[in-house]
Image 1 (cartoon, rainbow, N blue to C red):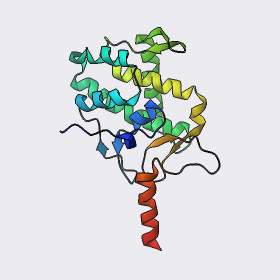
Image 2 (image 1 turned 90 degrees about the horizontal axis):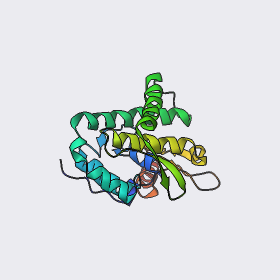
Image 3 (image 1 turned 180 degrees about the vertical axis):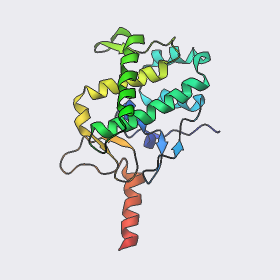
Length: 194
């Protein structure tokens, strides 16, 4: 498969973890087009996502021999379980109980393997770049940070696709992940019906 061409419209979630959940493209709640089907695309996404600092990314990329088929499948499985869990947490739909349990265990395991290090704002948990699970661990720690933040109450799902975003607006609030894509599609569909 060719490398996906990441653009600004792929990073509308407002948080690295939401942007990870949004690595599945769709326009009708189908979640059918995986944008990170291989490690090359995962690494390209990570280099633009803000998930890792430039130094962390450098360390992760130095250990590519740890990135196997099993780890990629695990990353995809975690993404879908976490999608179900976030949907449940923000009240969109009840998730499978095993998705909540699996997500909780993933976060717990990431802390067990992680390192508590100095960061720009004090200290933070970081994924160990020498572990096979480092990509999923970095994402699990990012999810934990989101769950503990004030932004959690602002997480919304696009009315047209499955993408999540943080609504920082006032008033009624945002309905679309991106007005240029889903918002315009919805307006065109509404116009056709009239």
